[in-house]
Length: 214
Length: 95
View (cartoon, helix red, strand yellow):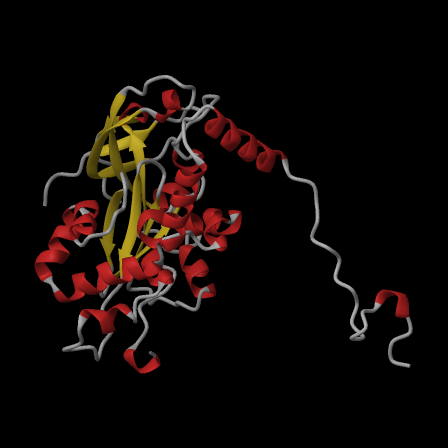
């Protein structure tokens, strides 16, 4: 018999997976308590909270990709984006709330990468929720100390002649990287170009996709 | 190119909520751009109205932050530092 311990196996012959049940953590309880108090005291309503959750969930890296693709094709917009990324994003129709955004542009000899060493500041109002690794202690600690090694682990090995600029998002500003426009995309429209702009390329842990890999 | 304004980050380690990363305290960089004013987060964190302070994007070299033996000394780190953490200093001599 391949499976001897029948007590631990499901009818399919595989081990039962333990239930993922555990008591609420301290902070989960705190969030529920504060949310319920705010509703009870009519500071906000359940409808407003759900609407805000829906608004956050509806934001995705596609918003940032559209901004980048426009910057690639529209020099006036690119200049406006570098001067005031919040205003330029709003002008495109993105509701980014009070977020103060700075756009940093990659160049043939400059590569930018974003990190928040103190917590996990991220341009959520434009790009949606950050990836889990962005919030990890390893990414936050190592990106300011050995950025090229971190980037190589993402599959991005930069030549020694490229200057790496790390941006530590320590206070009120949020950041987006404008990656370099890939070769071989001359004459492409903004919608097609936006398909090449990955989330990681806007954090700086990657570059835009090449048109052949689309 | 405009003259660089060099700034040294205070080397203090005060208790409480501070948004000046410890790894940059005592280090010298130059002002990449000026931002703000923004309310002081060290007061906001304790429910006080934040005093409006200018915020500076300060650029540091890897050599300054991690020492001359760092692998790529000319790579840079930019961080936003509130002005009460900064003191203007003379440009370092070129080495």
